[in-house]
Image 1: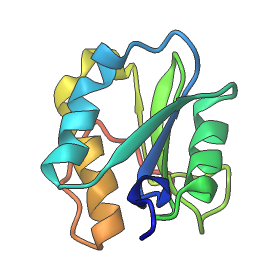
Image 2: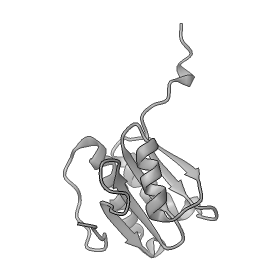
Image 3: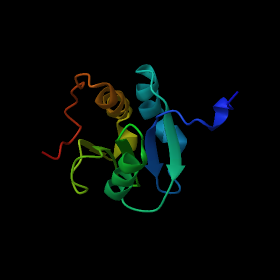
Image 4: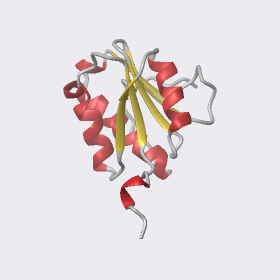
Length: 124
């Protein structure tokens, strides 16, 4: 019988720069969890845009989230690297919007309609 632990489940990848507190990201994680999708957090170097792009390309689900000190961004593998689906600057001040971003990340995977939030900036 195969060892189940080595089969990796498709997950949303969340790439953060160092020194990003997981406490600050809790609303985001709750939002993803609410939609019953797994998320994996890894620390990398780069800008929020570069991190999200890398995460989306490494995720089996093609959905990536990147976070640095300035902003958090949600993207999808098939859109240009400099674009994004949603960005939230100064995210630590907006836990509700952060939660919505998490919900929308999961809904992007599922193909469900997004929850709107006027604080979430769109690229196109």
